[in-house]
Image 1 (tube, rainbow, N blue to C red):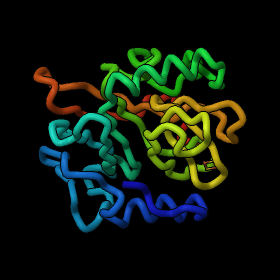
Image 2 (cartoon, helix red, strand yellow):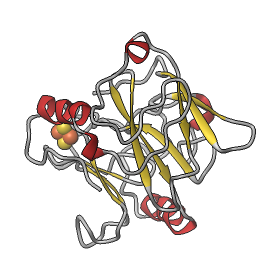
Image 3 (cartoon, rainbow, N blue to C red):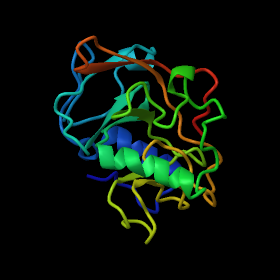
Image 4 (cartoon, protein in one colour):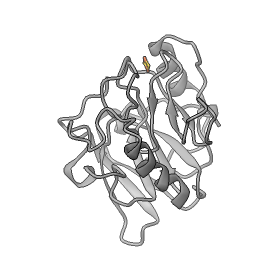
Length: 204
Ligand code: FES
């Protein structure tokens, strides 16, 4: 499922995310702040206060994503399959990335790696384009955006492109890779707790 708002102004795109449940794929948020497949994605009072959010990972099937509201921001969680991880090496080898090694601190130090994550298969990322704050579309299928497309995120506003770890493609107006928040996995690996923004990261 894609995010509504193609060709919209950035503010409108974000607003629509926060007001429509149709932007969410599946139900997977658990815990006291549970929000999933609800009629509204307005942030709760607790979220506005900066509380952590616990997300149940078990309903997110391989290759699929779930986008949840967290601190008034959309956070996308992608269950990446091995073929998707292979594309990360390919975009690097082709020299397509502005910041392939994530040298700009758009992620916590423990996510400064090729996957930009704690575990290769799980991407946890703030789904906000670093150009002007639009919400990029999730486009995992090869050639779905351009003939050379290997999968990733495409921003509808001004065409920024990112790979499947949120690293921005050269030629995009977006200056940086998308931000990764601070998070931890449960010991059994079945849920993730999104705790806070990494202080050095810029959203847009
Ligand atoms: S907001 Fe301009 S390309 Fe994403």
